[in-house]
Length: 378
Ligand code: GDP
Ligand code: MN
Image: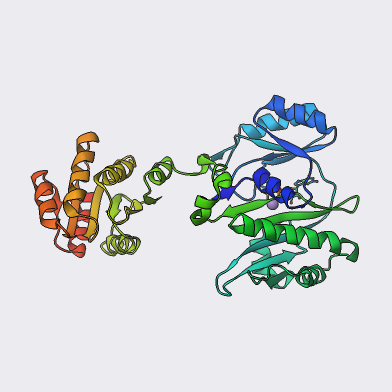
């Protein structure tokens, strides 16, 4: 789950990281009011969950409250990379002398978190990593020991940070590390961490990604989720505990088990088709869950055929069939369907479905070929 800049920076502030004064606004008037209160030049920043807002015109400097209102109005009317801007952050503008990158993520290869820093901050760090990787300093952190002071000093030295900033930098690095750990983050990033005109360190931008698998114990953070960035079908799927990811193809897939779902998608591709989604209904899915899954698949107008691949172990074939029939009674559709059902109570399930004139298949390959044919009108 992604957090907005303002949310990430509020968390950073709790961990002692200096951030600019500012607040979020949803209207021109609010932006004007905040600019007035700040009584300085302000920066108006679109709060959308994509990078490169600056380049897209979603970050603008304003000298007066009136200009702040005007720019906020413009930015609030924008869409950035397909996402509507619903809020802007109005921050006291910083006089920027230089921009540093500082971030923590998981290094799977090393099986440890890694802190990365660069004096070439501000721009896309991916570009720096690609073109001048030597400009990125990396330090792995032992999760049991945490970030040690000598490590942040090594980083400070590595990016040629002037000595007078080392103490504050150490506190910022430690705060970022603690925020990363406490929030179950998979990324905590300050880009840029700036040195200001009056020679202070300031986190001007902030970004956090939270591990979805930890949200059950991160109640406060999970309530910060912005639903605008997710396909409505994915939100609906989460409500029913389904693992669902929308894709661009035209064959809807309903499968139990993530591995089986991937195999199903591979086979659809092998036979020249293209899956419309990844969907794992999980083990022991109830007919309600199956019905919800089918409704979700069918809301996608691209779906020209649906393929079921159910390997019944805990999930019972008759229960799956009941779910499909219940959903079909509720959602009227002409979309053709093919089903491969094996395992516990599969025969009973198949019989129920045959009565409903659904195409069945013996093998997975057979099912995939039939689905591709149905999707192309065959
Ligand atoms: P991003 O483009 O989404 O990463 O948004 P950032 O918050 O990182 O802003 C992009 C760039 O805008 C920064 O690298 C800065 O150069 C500039 N910027 C952001 N905030 C300020 C500010 O308060 N003052 C000045 N002068 N520039 C800013
Ligand atoms: Mn940035």
